[in-house]
Length: 330
Image (cartoon, rainbow, N blue to C red; front, side):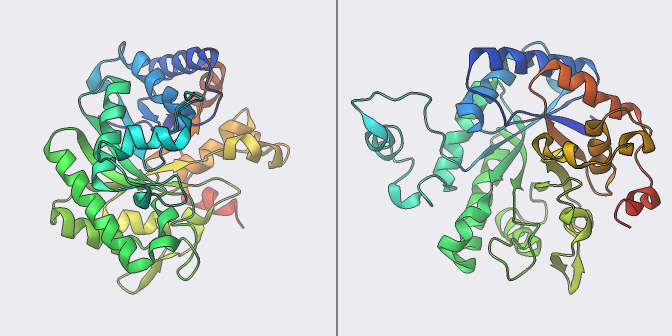
């Protein structure tokens, strides 16, 4: 299946039935318009985003769409028994069954132990009604880097990758990746920097040369162009941009924050969209991101069918050529 260069994201929005309905309508409109990539996470809208996509997926042929989800942040329930409290809830749901201990948590909210990943994947599979999920990301693993230190962190990554290889072998996922925020954007030496070379080495240790670490997710937009411009990734002695490093390693890339939750739109100059042959600032912003070499799919939150109608217009436009792309930054 050829993946669409635009994907529907499900991060934003309230945890309400009206938002669920709007997201389901948006997912159906997106699929009908030729979009086939959907992104979510266990903690998005308290788990409602996964369940809403699952309801929409019932009308789609399974071989006609690609879905990625993530695990890492411990999703709190939408409502807890006031007599139980969060600590008692954590003990009942995670600690007593042996899924997580308090010591497994970083910053009180993040975990990527093998047993937790397997547990959370089961929740996601059930929520979306899918036997196999196409892509399973570790969600912002760099959150643990400062707490663990580099050596213990990459050891933990290798264990997580080993767990993911097992999930592939069981037919529960097809591939895995890392969905990051700062990890690939910041240069070596800065807090939260992730080394793609070390992640690849961990994948080889976990799964051999035929490992299933196949994807990266990272932010890329006109206000945050580091993935396209900043050489933050040393690869065999050569400093590369994250996108170039991913291409060199044979990895596919999803971009998040492709329109920076609409904040970038207010910063674009008058006439910018028209200069690119498009109608709206959102289309122009998406056109930049999807055109960057190495980007497989630009993700964009689309919680209403009206968002879809506007954004899918870029699918009919040719991508910007490298000269035009580079000219945006002088």
